[in-house]
Image (cartoon, rainbow, N blue to C red; front, side, top):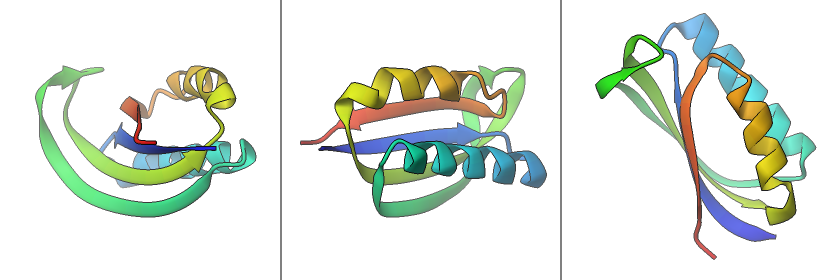
Length: 92
């Protein structure tokens, strides 16, 4: 297990944001991720439109995750259209 920082940008509409957030959390938990920290960073105007969206809702997670499952997890996240962008950064 390695530690990761993960940042997600969801659509700002409350129903779509909550569904996407729940999808991501359930997916990561099903892959045995252990959440260490969760932070809602709120709505922010994007520097450029992503999927025709001018704003996004930012969430930050710190988690422990098996690196062998990361590629598969990223592919599944990309399939959800309510997740505008995401990034996993290995911190140790």
